[in-house]
Amino acid sequence: MSRLQCLTMATALILLQALSSVSSSILSRADRITRLPGQPRVGFQQYSGYVTIDEKKQRALFYYLAEAETKPISKPLVLWLNGGPGCSSLGVGAFSENGPFRPKGSVLVRNQHSWNQETNMLYLETPVGVGLH
Image (cartoon, rainbow, N blue to C red; front, top):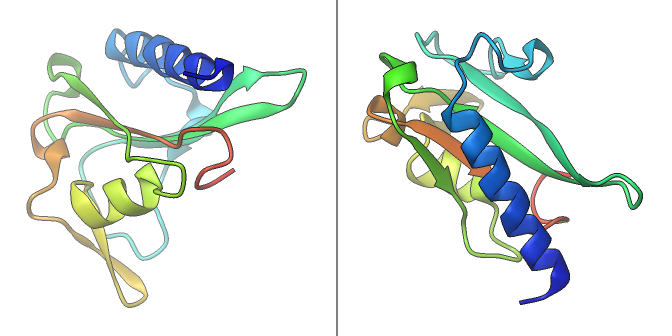
């Protein structure tokens, strides 16, 4: 495993540990998503942002967190990583597989089989440079 891959996995594990023990009230207000374009109203919180893994080289990982629909503080946190490089956890995992929404034309529709019905879902773009950056 390369140094960058090790650093990416270590960062993911640190982020996973940190997010698993906090409530949405402590997560950065700047990272809170009030509503995605074309999104229907929902009763759960969403966050997205960047986790810096190398300030000197200005490298960061993008994340998207969809809290569980009910009682998120008592639900487990799942870290979702699609295989990469070239396969986006956000574009594929969150919006095509098990995330809360699916694109339908210019709008988002609820995914009836979303995993965030029962768990907090954290989608992490990895390695650096894959997906949104």
